[in-house]
Length: 176
Image (cartoon, rainbow, N blue to C red; front, side):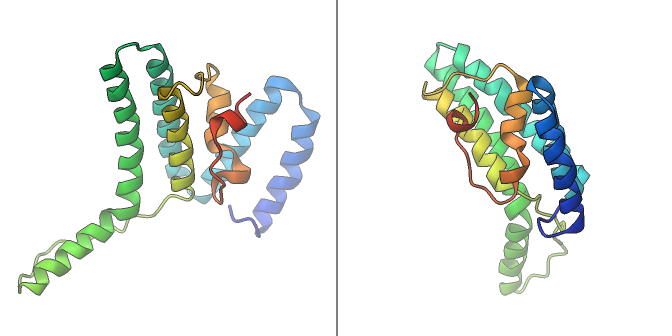
């Protein structure tokens, strides 16, 4: 959903009054549902990507906090980084590296029959990837307690006003 579009204006016109009419948990659920609707409006297929990133860091954050063994804590943090940066790297750079590799082979006179995948870059992937990872890193560094409410954490990751244009928000500033 683009900020200067009619669907966005309709979304805001419905979301804002509903948000202020609700209280407590219902308000939080609306914020999450609105954020997923906002994100899915662009391309619903990428909802699973943001959900998986959210679930991985929610679980890793809790596991890192409980774990006492430093090697295991590092492995858990590495899991978060590999998953998140793997998604980001694949969507942002896979086609670029394939095209560059093909050009390199062609410069040596080879004619490989390899094509790019035509990967679409998910909107906001950099913002939510680094925001979600910062949460896990802060827990690893013992600067933050893990959020026990998955809905709160998912809203932190997907919050629509800053999802596609930033800024990247630290969990300590967003999660009470």
